[in-house]
Length: 311
Picture: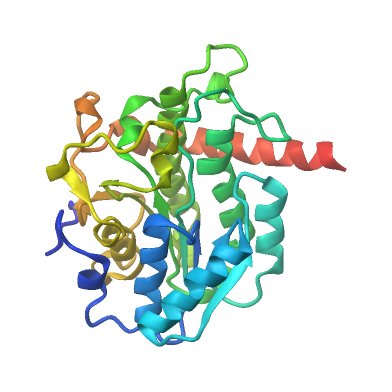
């Protein structure tokens, strides 16, 4: 495979990436669009003329953001819909209620390093449930809408934290091993990368591609459990810079028909043989097709078991 490179880099902003792009008539969903890079991702897509749905846990916060985006872009087609990706039922209800084609899905919502082991009502570890399973359920439910769009793109927001841990398929929910906040976060972000690989392998024939993106170090409420952002100042980004790679994966013609990649700083990341200080690069284990298939099957099984148990 040829490595994807672009004119963009570390300091590029979402506005830089969308220059000259027209998405009039296209529809996009951005999860977690009430704060941080989710807001700037949604703003950039709205600035291209797309109809953008802010999928948020708190409707009031979403309404305020939507008003701000409309004011700054002039786009009045900015919608708000409730979605809690930590809640399987909420993700599946959102997908069931969607009507018509969907051209862009940005799986942006996430949590990081919960200090104590928390579980969803299904008994799933919360970071894995939020960062992977909820978005997996959402994308699976929206598959028909994505296929109907023709050339749809899924953007899965990952992290260099995936370098901390592979997915431990024998114990993803920490039922046997001691819980560790960063190991749980790391495996959940590895799962995000593997989802992009698995979705592209299964859905490319429907015109759907998925890529994982690393936004960079941005001070947001994501770090509320870690004591704030600790990255050196020279390696930090603004929210507009952090949204740039998500927007690139969503709209750039350079990625037409290309999926299953991991992008950072506007370009495809280089593979690294070790944790690399958890700073940059992509772990080969997080893009392995065989592992992606195993995770896909396991995720399908978890969702099916949860639905059966809720009947």
